[in-house]
Length: 607
Ligand code: M6R
View 1 (cartoon, rainbow, N blue to C red):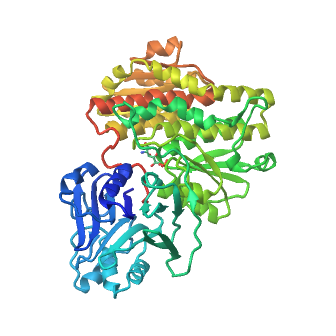
View 2 (cartoon, rainbow, N blue to C red):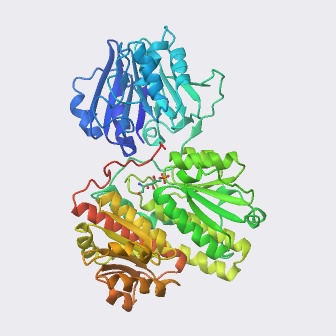
View 3 (tube, helix red, strand yellow):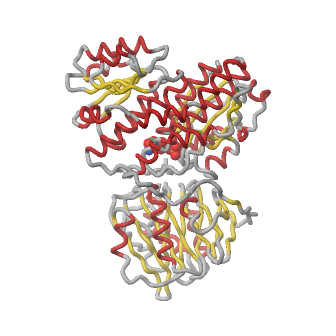
């Protein structure tokens, strides 16, 4: 949530900061701002709205080689220009950008107001420049650290001081910052996406660390002043410039990228002879695997749905008890962590605060923690230390699509590994490996001919309420379909296990209600069919996603959306595709901002 970019170097800072903001905009897009340090002092410009709204404000900018910038997702205070970052102290000497939340804001604000400070915004961030100014006696590092020591909460922040145009001060506690070391320039950002235009040599700041950033490098220390030995890492991974490649929206482009992204996740990881999978990053021998007696996937949002699919597949195929947990709940439940339990943190961004919090709690309790992460080098990946990258490539659309199918693919690869050590024969394993290998082709085939999506969209966009139903593995898919429709089209809807629907939600059904049902040809088909008859009898209009050739479901449906036949464990990857398209096209039909839906941000780095 929120993006930070800072620049100090030998080039004009402003275009580099604005380019960085554009690359970070997916993290938050309520408002944006920039502060440059010039020989005349601070030059600050802000605007409400997207980064492009900032451009008209950037008239006659001074040419300078140092500055900080921010794109905001509001936490404290509405979306207004005064609340946009950077924030400045009363004397106009210090500018600060900040991601995170200052929890003791009220006490600190009262204290500062007692000293005569007049606040100009409703934000928690404004505390920081005032505090730094309060402690400033000519030593900016001392003022910066002393101010941060007063703060309880999370921050990734950067500050510039008018009297010190040769350095930027940055700090991290719970909100990521990466320092990019270029030739005669140093760039700091809240994620590597904004760094790679300059350099791939980076230093990751850890919690409770601060850094003094100059043109020539960086000096990292702990908040308590003790020195830190830094290691320079090389970021790999595809951080290419976000490009829609001719698609009208990133969401649609990412939906259509799924044959490739799944293929990348599978590449080199299937052993068709042994009927097995290899996930080297887990660093687990068969002996380690045989000792796994439980699997728990912690995650949020779409990643949680992928975790639910993975857990069901693990139980059914490897016969190991498994479940998914919502990270924000799990971390505060005083969880019971057994040494024979394997935990997976599933996260596209690798920066989600709740998932990260759960990871820290599990690690603290001695749990075996693995990441299933997309963004290489992200905080969750590094905190887990072991795991698997899903290699979906950059996902720009706030509504996650290709990450879901790659997360499921990654978890299915693990399922096969675990199942082979437990109870799957080589013949059965070969069959699974072969079917996983066929997935990209099946996805491609469906996307080339997705069926009458627009007929279904027509039913959904006028609905006051829509219900998504699925059983077994199709229940998390139903949850995912409803989440997408809410996020992208803002259509009120919910998802229920099909069998549970008659215990309450059936009261919502009338002759206007569209019911989206996911009923592939698996062991639950008959039961799901009975449930659909129950809602049909109440007048619901059925949009049914079913296996090609299933005449009975085709006839029952008001809109029939056939998908290619596949084994039960592959079905979530195929059946989610029409749901992604439904949400996308419903959003387009309703004129929504597809890639940046209201109130959302790509990575949720606050609790
Ligand atoms: O980056 P993560 O996978 O950890 O993000 C988790 C959720 O915030 C994310 O999936 C969110 O639900 C998406 N907007 C869904 O489209």
